Every structure is written in C-alpha cells, then in structure tokens.
Amino acid sequence: MTTTFPEPRSGSETVAGIPWLARMIDKSRLEAEGTITALDLEYPCPMDQRLLSQLGVDAKTFQAITTHANSDAEIIEALQTAGASLSA
Image (cartoon, rainbow, N blue to C red):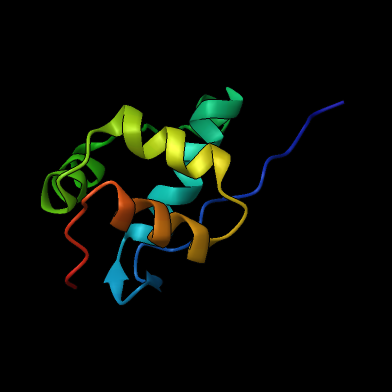
C-alpha cells in the first residue's frame, strides 16, 4: 500500500499578502512530520531561504512556529511576536 501525502499549496498562493509563504508553511510542516522526501521536496529550499531572510527568521524558528500553530493566522501572529518583517 502506498501512502500519499498532501501537496503543499502553490507558491503563488499568499498568506498575509506574501507569495510563497503558504507553500513554505506547508513544506515546513511536512519536513517536521518527516514526509517531505516522499513528495521529492526540500525545506528549506533556495526560495524558502530567500523568504526566510526577508522575514528575518531562521528555518528552525519558522518550523517551530508552524508546527505549534493551528492556522495561518496563528502563524502570522507568532511571526510578528518573533519580530518578523511581514511587509509583502
């Protein structure tokens, strides 16, 4: 039996007006679950690293936020608390 995992959202989908953030959230969660390689994806990939740099957060902090938050809104709130720059 083959297990399938949900694909991350499209890179063009936005969260808080920021392209790629929705996809990076999903990829971060897949990485934390240990299922990202089954989808032949990487976290953080170069695009993720670029966005993380713009946000001013490192990959481990971002992953901790995404795995503890229950929604995109909670992630945005936690990023703001962490001092992330969320200008689109």
